[in-house]
Image (cartoon, rainbow, N blue to C red; front, top):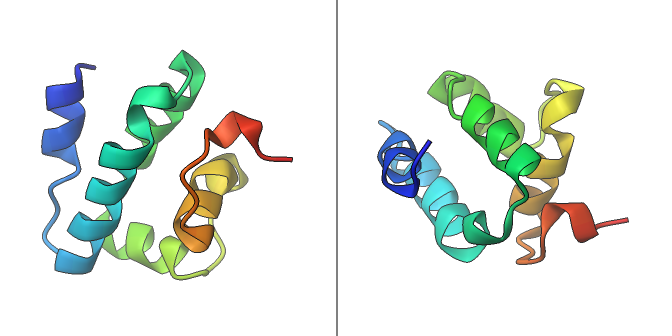
Length: 83
């Protein structure tokens, strides 16, 4: 998926989610590995209510844990660089 396609998929119906996904896209997406990009693209296929709930700390599928850590901590490091 191209960066433009991902950018378009980050546009959601919930302003807070738009802001969180947009910040991730601007700050970190370009540094993701191909596998991490695939994970983020899969993340974007989920519905808005689930995404927002997960970002707010509700239980989420384990495969999304590396992405959700970014949103919870607000870090700007590569996902793979975290312990």
